[in-house]
Amino acid sequence: MRSSIFSSEPLRDIPQTRWTAVMVLAVMVCVSVVGAWEMYWRSEWFVPSYRNSDGLWALTRDRIDDEGGRGVAIVGSSRVLFDVNLESWREVTGTLPIQLALEGTNPRPYLTHIAQETTFSGLVVVGVTEGLFLSPSIGLRGSVVNAYRNRTPADRMSQWLSMHTVEPYVAFYDFDIALFAIVRRQPFWPARSGMTPELPVVRKLANSRVTRQTDMWNKVSDNPDYREVTRGIWLAFLNAPRPAPPPPEVQERHISSLLAEVTADVQAIRARGGDVVFVRAPSSGPFREAETKGFPRELLWDRLLAATGAVGVHFEDHADLQDFELPEWSHIRADQTDRFTRALLRHLRDAQEAGGRARAELR
Image (cartoon, rainbow, N blue to C red; front, top):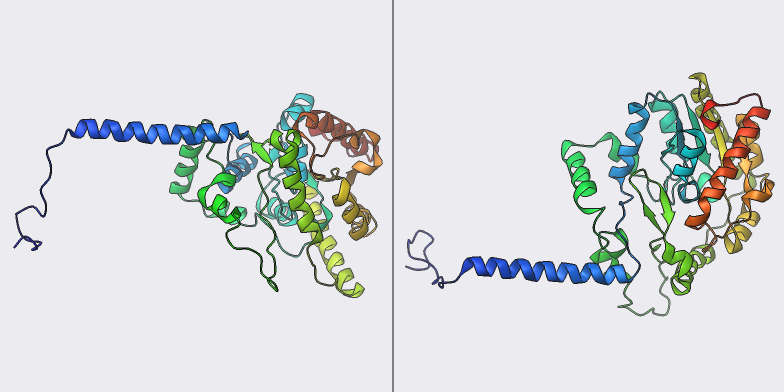
């Protein structure tokens, strides 16, 4: 019977076809479709860049071990990720920083990681964004340390292939325009009465290089319509309903515990010959208004420096750290980060020398 799986008769007739021609046609269609997709996204300002993935973070973290635990490591949130120009830092000091900052993420667990799980004895630059620094959770990119610890040979090979065969060449290979990301942004279901609105997903803000040098995407800074999209997303976050703040005594216990943990990490790094400095990068507009109201300097910044005895550079204290354009109120546009980085280095160097703790990494 033809239906039997043991029959030697074919289940259907296979037509006589020029399979080589079919294959060539299929390849041509595939290349044409992919090429058209690539051209479309390039017309939308996308360019090839490296994906800011857990795998790239892990490769960057490897530099701590590969370089003998010296040099400069940066932990923090998106402001020191976007605002510090690694190439400018290297031009001034001869050292390329190990960029470990992560967007939307509390840097304290990563300071602890360096203090407790490495032999790093260089200079750790910690970016402070008060709302994230005070958060009891890790935040958006909390998976990267576990991804680093649990890497398999397959993970390493996948990262290598992605970095060397796709990322430098293909513009549409971007998290923001992955198929399901695009689908999630579509207004398929209208808002209904009584329905709690979801916060919007943060859109693409930057392009990354293989060193994790991260530059604000020029569409954010130069395209007024897209800039308003990004600002609208930040306003949605800033205006979202929040639970009532805890009683003062609960907040005080949390901050005291936090300061004790950070101080212990700073002391562990100093015991190996290293040091830690803190940086408060610029913000403006509604962001700055909300941060000034919710996180005055005496709540965290002043106490952080006092508890750790560390040097801190706050943009409000220096005129040359304030004259920058922040298109969406939170990050410096890419073509101004060179000037910011050079000014920041001067203030870090001066403050360290004034405190009698000059560092070779800043010379």
